[in-house]
Length: 310
Image 1 (cartoon, rainbow, N blue to C red):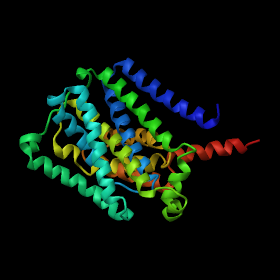
Image 2: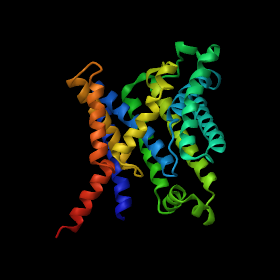
Image 3: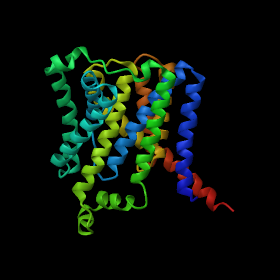
């Protein structure tokens, strides 16, 4: 077993042990914290996977909310199991269609287009209130009948799945192609790589993962309103997590999610009110300035130095 395989296996095992251990402890605070960390981590992985093609999305919130509303609207018609499958399909088709329309655009215009999708979906939810509940919100089916221990086990399994998907796009077969698409799309096309098609496929996978995160989030509580999910926060949060943890890695977004939630809890407990957000933001800026490659980059640098030590 080589180093990369061992590291990936260790990451999956660590997620399983932490998630399973917290679920077994049945401590309400830690279960809720773990649920938030893991959903944020998978959302950040979905953002990071797309960034490997050179595209920056501000539309994570669109797919996050779409996953919730698709699940809630389909469940009375199809039942829970098919509603989950339908939610994934809706997110995949939406990402594919949006990708076909926008992924030929330059990076900035693509980011604006994805942000526009978030705002458009929020407006549609409010306009078609007879179906969506409008500003009054909607009630998706509750995950695992509201049992927090079982909910955490499901979210843990999804987190491992998200890490596996991320590692698939970091494999020795795909990573060089994505790197070329990101850094020199003209050379990638000349080398026989279908640049736009590659970006559409990756964007579809990214949208599906974000939609699953949204569906999980909504089904944990059984009730959401559009202003809670179709908000820029769910687009900025995964970006911040991936940058803090380390982009173009699987470990980075996982570590970044832990760090973000830890900073938020500490700042809220020590400062309280809305003032904690100032300190919270300042610490994030310091991390970005001092650790430009994130926590994963710091760990890799330490490992490299230890490897050179006599």
